[in-house]
Length: 81
Image (cartoon, rainbow, N blue to C red; front, top):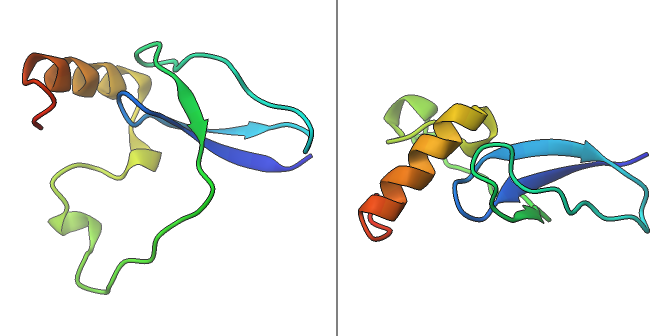
């Protein structure tokens, strides 16, 4: 079965889900309960955009607990990180 990357629209939590081509995934986010959407592609970063220079860790590395904290922070700041 193919493996798909799903990302929460609200907090950015991501997870890999294995399901058939004609199937879908409709479970809520483990971190905040938000809507999970399939990620259809990736971006390529330049050599200067290393993780050590990024403000926050990449989405693929956050835990459910950190996803909740991000969601609460965005909610309390009117969407401003």
